[in-house]
Image (cartoon, rainbow, N blue to C red; front, side):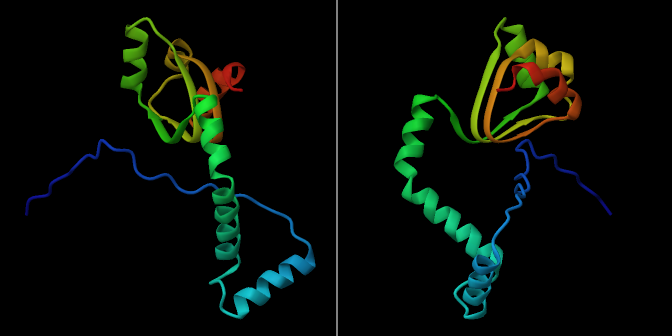
Length: 140
C-alpha cells in the first residue's frame, strides 16, 4: 500500500474569531422569540445576520477608509521566506491589514524585528507569543 503526502502551500482558512457581547434580558428575549418563530436558526445566526446587514449599510465608508489608509482587505500571510526576502532586499514591511494578518509560526522574533517596521491590524493578528512580544512596540 502506497501512502502519499501532499503539502499545501496555501495556508488553511483561519478559524473565526470569537467575541463576547452582553445583552439585556429584553433584547435576548426578542432574539429567542425570532429564533423560536423560525426567522433564524439560532442566536448566532441572528447576530451574524445583523452585523453583516449593518456592515453592508456602511460598505461605501469602509471602502473609502480602506483606500485612504492603504489597508489590505482580507487575509495576509507572512512566511519566514517572505520576511527573509524583504530583509535580503534591505527593505522593511509596514503591515496594514483590515481582516487577518498571520505571521507564520516558524518566524523568529529576530527575523520579525529585522523585517517588520510597523503593524496596524483592524481585525486579528495571529503570530507566536514571542513574535508578538518582540513587535509590541511596533504594533499600533
